Length: 180
Image (tube, rainbow, N blue to C red):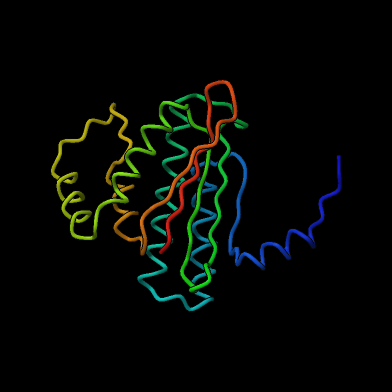
């Protein structure tokens, strides 16, 4: 196995202002532990409390969605792995990004839902959120743009962005990015 150049990795993380990065299978307890680390980091950085809560909420929603999706598919740990990054952009805003494998058809549905959310302004997102809250919830139905995704879109300072990259065998890697 090739040696990992940790210094180069550290340098790249610093250049890209990456605060937190995780890659691998994600469990409920790991989501919680990484969430605690993120919360502590943001407190130490003296982040504005509302920004810190929005970043934390986006992280939790994204990782729980990944976990629920991969568990429903009964995927192996390797297939169920997630890549999660919290960073800062040039303007100092927080960027929460997450990605995972997804079946191509599910990925296309998710991208369509995110594209639809990206076209809405804050008032339309708020109305959609309230409408979704009023709908009866069927726990056996999987939705591509549920309450959590709408909430992330509402908290984001710019439209959500997502992409799909085919990886073979009917699977794609989906990436979602929210700027808080």
